[in-house]
Image 1: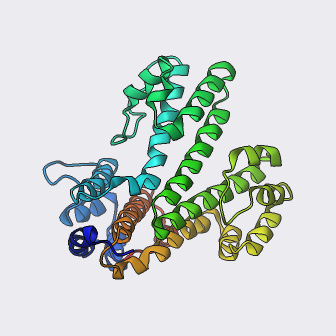
Image 2: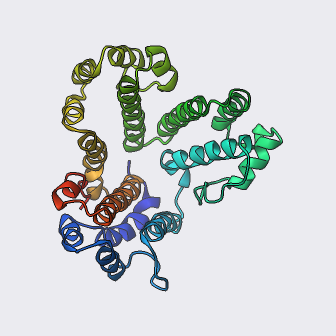
Length: 323
């Protein structure tokens, strides 16, 4: 969709894309002897805060902040990025509910940069002013809070909020008016449902449990996937193959890490054509996903180096890059 208001933003973005990590830069990181060497190289490339010495978590957190600082500085409609922000919003809601329902104070449990702070969420929940939450959160927040308060079932609380988050992501994708964002939202829900099916099959959960946890989406039938999972791991793979997720099934059979890599690589492959768009929100959305993928991949390398994993084990987990 051509939109003149995005022309300046996309032009500016093209310069920023030149700083995205390529496979060659990842090889430079892999050549470092340890985590400290990687952090030093990253700082040379402008990562983190140049005025402070930061550990891995601090540096990666700062890079995530930079993503949104960059996009917000372009003065575009930020609502199109809701599908990417909702997971953090719901994670904080989960944390707030559990903070209220258990004894003591637990610092550092909230993700920063969300529309409502952890303290605001706690106040809303304690005063039962659910109307102050975004509309898509209100019913789920009330149900999850009351269930946890009366049953102390943390898993049930998570299921309620995770499903609500997926439903909100899908709805935001539809409302965006952008095919790329709608497809991303549908894929996000489908992959989440697949992960629920795989975990549930391994832990012996019933089909009814899975249906309660899964959210409807276009590409995957919740009923069919839950029924397949109840029949065993191979049954899940067989269903995915017939539903157009054959490569996903193959990666699941290979290993959990291969499946996780496939999930991220699928997103990158989907957004790569945005490098040739000139005036739509698509390139901005793709840039955010590319940066998030880049940070995740760097985290994998840093973690592997810190744990002294063999290089081949780290390489198995490295994601495809956008550039």
